Figure 1 (tube, one colour):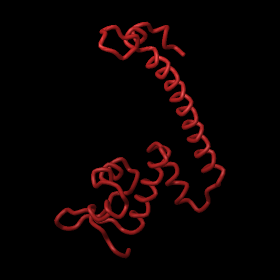
Figure 2: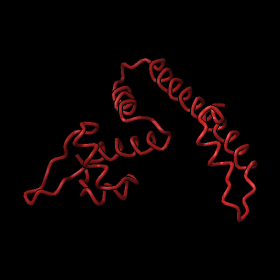
Figure 3: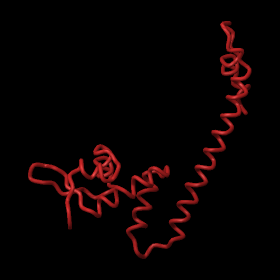
Figure 4: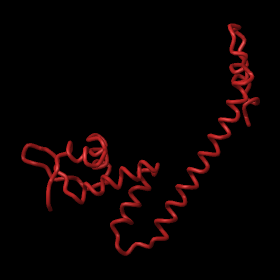
Length: 138
């Protein structure tokens, strides 16, 4: 089994918080860790690798559901790489769609902000345009 780490040490080694580790354990993303007689959780190197995997996947924006699928695929030596690629491609498409939406928001907000004089007057074209729903719909 090798070295066992407390949750605090596992958090430092994985880059996650102890709270997130407990959450991942409670949600079943990682298996429950054994406890000492005094109730401290202990994590082995396999669990630490899983935690690092989860951290990297979260940094790429994968959902917990997708991470669960990725973990299952990672741990399955019989996996088909196309399944992993399909999951990654699907996530990439979601990211592309979000980027497109953000760019549209940026364009509209830039246009709206440029229309405001930004002076001491109480009149504000930004607020007026926000109040008119048809004005900001692309």
